[in-house]
Image 1 (cartoon, rainbow, N blue to C red):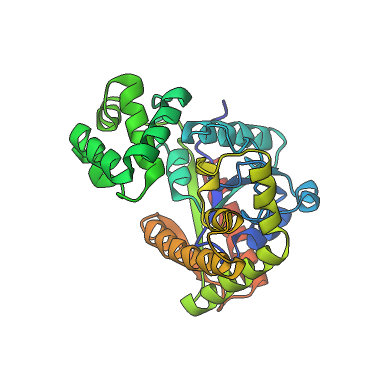
Image 2 (image 1 turned 90 degrees about the horizontal axis):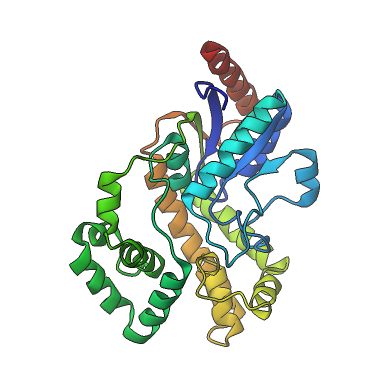
Length: 316
């Protein structure tokens, strides 16, 4: 494996801020390829709702870590680190520049080497816990987790069914609680040096862009995408199907809300997610935050390009 001391550009920021558009400009300028750092774009068939770039764009600018798992496939953070690491090696071997871009902070931390690489996993155990949660309820399962691993329960939102199930799966598959694994195992082997470029906009402008994007998604096949997934028996309880937008459209498909209510719910949860993203990303060692309402794409591109070259040359 190639020495990882090289600094790699990473475009971060809240959803709908403009990361994709700028990463494409930067990739053209640097003769680069893009590694998607998005926990939902890894899944095949989830296209409209995850706002993937089109196949035509991907033929022009090669993208990695998109469409690498089926919606019912277990894809861990360790799997993502492996996917991204192999992509970096291939890109560098072609004398091109790897550019990370996305909005999943946990994946970025894993790339730096900040999470465990090999937590126990057992699909049969997970399915059994999911069925048990349907019978007993989320609150009862959360109380069980609190009794088994109080530290993990503090870190997990009581309403986060997926993480409650995952924590209990780790315990039942291994006999040891998640906290034990975190204390007794080394972090994942990411180890990349990132040059984080932060993109942001005034909140009202960002919210307007979220409104527009969700409306466009709903007009461009998002409801039909969800109906197709359900018709092909991808279970609504799958983690891939629990993202905002998908969750609301599943409720619409079941007759539990109108399409207008589904759209409003998607907008509401997307805005809340954007706020959480900024809370997480503000803790990152960002080279510089750029307000996209104050700088032109050309000016931003020139400044970032020059700094990327400077840092990459300094590390050689």
